[in-house]
Length: 297
Image (cartoon, rainbow, N blue to C red; front, side):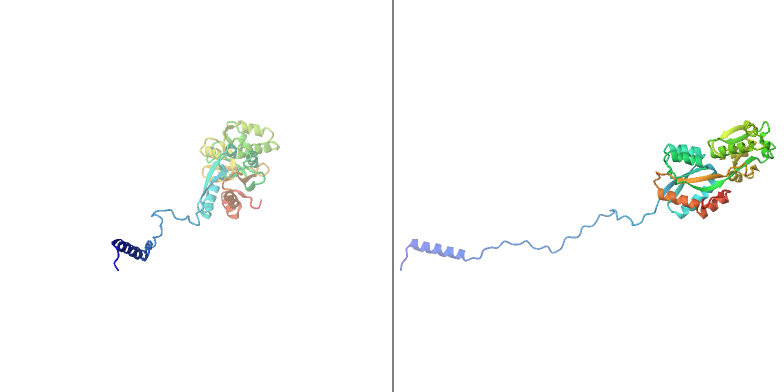
């Protein structure tokens, strides 16, 4: 049967459409999985590492101490620093009254060691020392000294009244200065000396010093014929000064108190230093320099 050209064209077109409809649909291509995982990120060279778990303890301990304690406390510092690596003990040695003035003005300090109770009380009034924290840690006593060649020919306490002598004392604001005045007052109350003793001796005073070491130095250099210091001071310069003892009934046994400062940034270390000073080891050093032990007081 013959088909018309139009019919044949229509048939060919239908067959073409059927062939296209049977072809499988094209699927989208998935991206290929990476063959290698990315390398882990590392800290750049030189980045800081974690802090060490332990750090050496370093601290400066500021100790304000009476001048008469200089040599003994310096030896104590050496032992204390050895037992506490990283700790540096820094001293301020002066007359106790000078130290209290500095403390009252706010000078940084951790420990105060006074040569008498009254200056410690003054530090307490400044509010920088808490009442009740002070402890007596050592004692001392007075002695009259002369230059080794004794130009004033002073052999007894009564000789201090000789006209024309040059006597050097510490100022009454300094503990040893007040103790010296107390000695003269006690002597004046005894018949052996009479009440004129104190004013007569004081008339021979040519200088009042700010601390006991100045008295010692001036007498040793011959700038005075006599002076009154602690026995511990006289022992330091035995080649250049001679001593005249003051009997117990006229002497003053000076008590030295020590206390931490209430605002110390090193409170634990300050107390450790005080404990060491009062320990048998600390007391042994103090006795070595002529002080009277106050252990257990």
